[in-house]
Image (tube, rainbow, N blue to C red):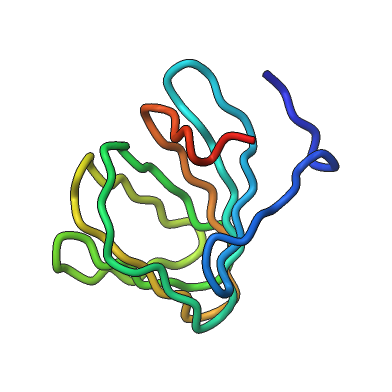
Length: 107
């Protein structure tokens, strides 16, 4: 599967948090997230392993109770079913890969 940048559309997940599905296969899905300064993703967990890379901005991830300050070029991997949350300290863009595919991010 290939997708051109011009084909990417975003949908609102939360106030100030928008997601666009880039590509997916049988086992992984890659998405791009745009987060506005001050937006937050509340504590949650899911069965998907989540690996990401911060393209721009600055964020704080709280993973299993520990805070992680994330700058452009930093990356992360959050295991399946691990409680985590995130806050955008600046307007931020992140790319994340989920395995298995997040069915709720398709379409």
